[in-house]
Length: 148
Length: 123
Image (cartoon, rainbow over all chains, first blue to last red; front, side, top):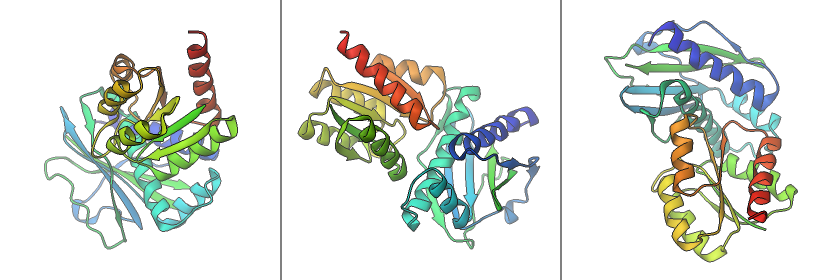
C-alpha cells in the first residue's frame, strides 16, 4: 500500500463522517503500526480482503463515538447491538467504496465485529498495517489497513 | 406501494424504513440476508425492494436472480457500498432498475426511489 493508495482511504473516511453526520472528522496522517500494538477500542469491525489483494481492513471506535454518531443520524436505538452494527457498517462502507479506485477484484467480506479493548486483531504477517487515526467530535478512533 | 427492505445492517434497515415510510411506501418486510429476502418476497409480494449486495448466506446478486423468478415486475433499487462501475452494471444486468451507493442521505434515497417508481409507471 503506497501513500497515494492510503490517501484513498483517508478521503473515504472524511467523506463518510462529513456526509452522514454533517460534522467533519479530523483524519490524521497514516503511519506504520506495530502489529503487536495496533489500536483497539470498544468495537472493532474487521473486513477480510481477497482477490488480487489480500489482507484486512478494520475500523475500531469507542462506544461513545458510535452512540453519538447514531444519535446524530437520527437513530434513537443506541443499544450495544446497534453500536456493533454501526461499526460493521462503517468498515463495510469504507472498504466497499475503495472499490471505486481499486476495482471489483478488491473483494470484501461481510464484517466481523468484536467487542472489548482487550481484543487482539490478527493482521497478515506479509502486509504492513497502516493506522489512519481519526477524531470525530471529541472521540478518537482508527482505521487500520493491512493489505498486500 | 409495498416495500421490502433487504440489508444485513439493522441501522440501515431502520434508516430506509423511516425515510421511505415517510415517503408513503408501506414497509411489508425486513430481511437481513438474501435467503430470508426470497422467502419474504414470496409471502409479502412487494412492489419495490431495496437490496444490499454484500450479505451473509446469499448475496444480493443471487437474491435478485431468485426474486426475479418469483416477482418479474418488482422494482429493485440496489443500495450498496460497492462503488465500482462493474458491480453496478452487473446488478443492472441481473435485473435491478437502480443503484444507490452507500453512504447515502435520506434525500438521495427518496430521489432514487421516486425515479424508479416514475420509470415503472411510465412503462
